[in-house]
Image 1 (cartoon, rainbow, N blue to C red):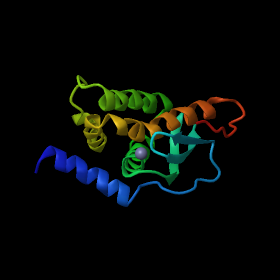
Image 2 (cartoon, rainbow, N blue to C red; image 1 turned 90 degrees about the horizontal axis):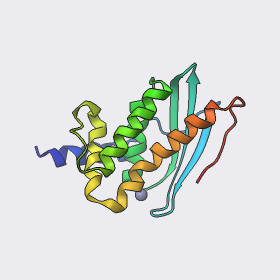
Image 3 (cartoon, rainbow, N blue to C red; image 1 turned 135 degrees about the horizontal axis):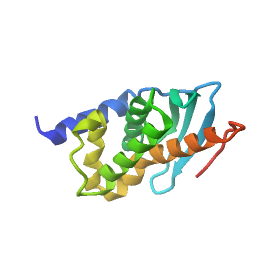
Length: 151
Ligand code: ZN
């Protein structure tokens, strides 16, 4: 099986059956993300246990890439600390944008997102959920734990 086929299967699977999709109440942070280039909209909600993401869910509507990316993202960061999640965000961002990014073997299924690099117009679709996650982690950091909305 070609590597690209494998990647495509992961994306199709996570678009068809998104993981951690739905509402999360109550949540420590709730942030809405919007990608005007494509029209993708999603809301990321998460719960923190001390510094660890104890639960995370997303909902919204978007293209296959944005939905699959959000599904993969929630799977990857659940149980991670804030710092670990942000580190992963950096790693994925490089994977999406940097042709010289090192091989992504240790990223597991997230490596499937590297296929998006060949379609620059879709990079924002794939990175939307990650930017939204970063905003949610910042929002949860505030003492009030209030929900915020960003675009
Ligand atoms: Zn999109």
